Amino acid sequence: GAGVSQSPSNKVTEKGKDVELRCDPISGHTALYWYRQRLGQGLEFLIYFQGNSAPDKSGLPSDRFSAERTGGSVSTLTIQRTQQEDSAVYLCASSLNLGQGQETQYFGPGTRLLVL
Amino acid sequence: DAKTTQPNSMESNEEEPVHLPCNHSTISGTDYIHWYRQLPSQGPEYVIHGLTSNVNNRMASLAIAEDRKSSTLILHRATLRDAAVYYCILRDPSGGSNYKLTFGKGTLLTVNP
Image 1 (cartoon, rainbow over the protein chains, first blue to last red):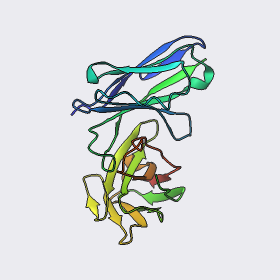
Image 2 (cartoon, rainbow over the protein chains, first blue to last red; image 1 turned 180 degrees about the horizontal axis):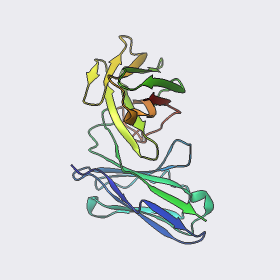
Image 3 (cartoon, rainbow over the protein chains, first blue to last red; image 1 turned 120 degrees about the horizontal axis):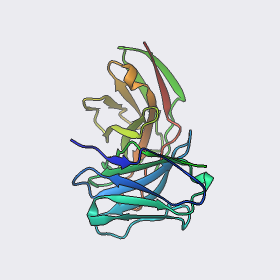
């Protein structure tokens, strides 16, 4: 079946511009995650959506970052007034949220963001 | 999540078995052992997980020590496509905000043709 998809796959923008990154999770997955991965680094948690619950935004690095999930499916991560340190791969994942011990996350291919 | 320790790198030849070790001496009785991998320029990919018994799926096998302080991911016949960084992590089902995945440095597996 279809996996997690993300768009665009690559985005080059100028410092100060806003960008929108999109994630389409696996159909039926109630949990959706955004992570950031800088070159050669590990995963950095950004935000978590679960059903109709309030999202966990504790990983968002600044108020320039926001995300929403419409209709419990598609999610958009928005970065306003981009800075060069925002350059990274932004990864989206989804899961069935079966219980946190056994829950497995399925990742999209990521959006490679380069801020010039 | 409790800490895991993996070798920085390992090398294998194509079509040979690969045994990737992971030590987790501080594992709690309820922690699940998960393995993910990340191929070059791709997002992480779930491989397998288990609690106490050995597990098999189409990708790999997971052998868990009787005391659960270590585990081994087994790729039965390595292919070039298996070249990736492999991450062993522990997942605590007790709730809280432990849905956040955190990877250590993992093991970089090189597969030689």
